[in-house]
Image (cartoon, rainbow, N blue to C red):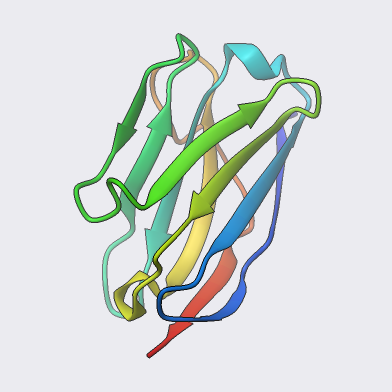
Length: 118
């Protein structure tokens, strides 16, 4: 059973930074596709970044150049570094993993709230 435990959310001023962490247990971390979704109030959950097991990455246009996904294979942890945060980044952020190394959504974290004040 794969478990994803997120941490690092909080309240930050616009222009500030936060780093989210997602600790993974229960499966070989390097074989998993990892990603982050977010869901703002009244909106659908959206994919913002993804890391394939091959090492390739994807970023949504809304976060490209500001957010970075990275992995620490020694700690079985994936990070989301968020810089130059905007009020529209306010959402619940979810970590997700895919066991085939390509697709996401097999496993989900509990979500962590990020609030960006203007």
